[in-house]
Length: 78
Image (cartoon, rainbow, N blue to C red; front, top):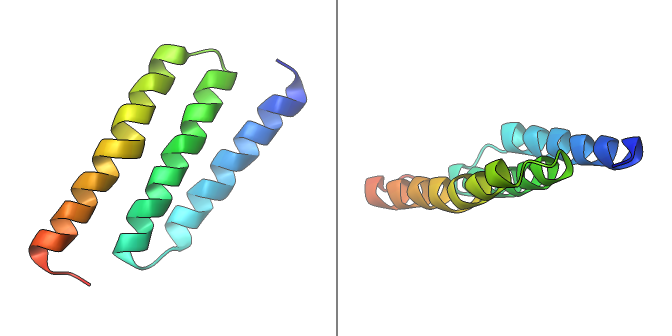
């Protein structure tokens, strides 16, 4: 991979991480956390770690945001 692809992937992860921190609404934060995990998945693919990318895709992009949203629904937080 070229250095440009690596830098773009790192910039995506940095921007998505900042978006998660800057979001204050817990529901929106769970969605941006999912986007952040998708960006991390792309970064892991670029770094040629497909096993870690699949784990991040399954756990970080799907399970964790789902659990956060279900917890918010159960506790009644808005």
